[in-house]
Length: 54
Ligand SMILES: [Zn+2]
Image: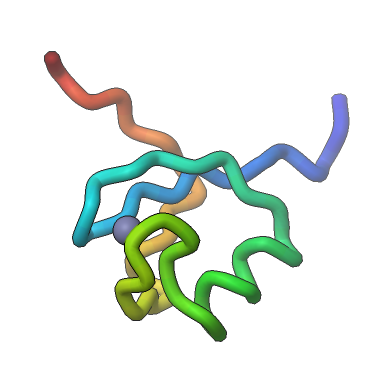
């Protein structure tokens, strides 16, 4: 088992879900959502992915 499991990030603005690693997480916090450019806070990034109902 790897301890570096990807984090699931869901953008609060565009609802785009992205699997991110630690470096990507920092990029999101620094530069915002890669899809829509919305500002991202650490609270927006969950370590426990939650499947969205369709
Ligand atoms: Zn977005």
